[in-house]
Length: 258
Image (cartoon, rainbow, N blue to C red):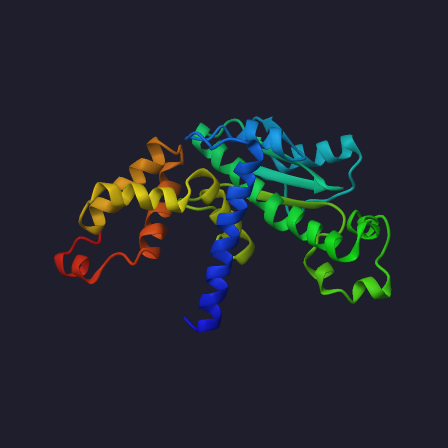
């Protein structure tokens, strides 16, 4: 990895950690695990949460028409884990009540991450740089002027309504996680639900030896104490151990790499 890319990765890791910490700071209390995330969202952010059984794209489309939002979600009508619709500085998260409690928790965290990273943060940056006169542009009420278009900040802001749908399903992290925007949302969702620093400290306290033993411990911790779905817990555990430099050469020699 080049020095520039390594520096960008470190900056991105700091952004994810800081964003998660700022979210929980808004609640005024440290989170209890597994997180009561829906209540935390409703108390801290301009977000509504809608539970829907057997959630489909058509449910989102019917809702946007009912509330007078002109927005089309691309693709065919299909089952969804969840969906975020953000408009005029506010948002609505939908999730499927037919999913397990663990899957619902991760869906809420994933869509929350999209709101924080991909909608709210760029919007706040645009207002900070260009002033509140840019709000009608961000809300899709007028086109940007030539001078406004010259500002690079507008290149990263969703103009008008933004939506994101969490497709069904797959093992491990959601499909599309190789894309940067999805990867960041997944990472922030996991940091909100199970902070890396906390997991690393718990792992240190066990003094477990061997990659397989440490992987099993982390996976079970994420399932039982943090309420993650099993496949996502296993993926999170592997990613964290990889970040810590595991499996080690000794693990390879002893055949304890799974």
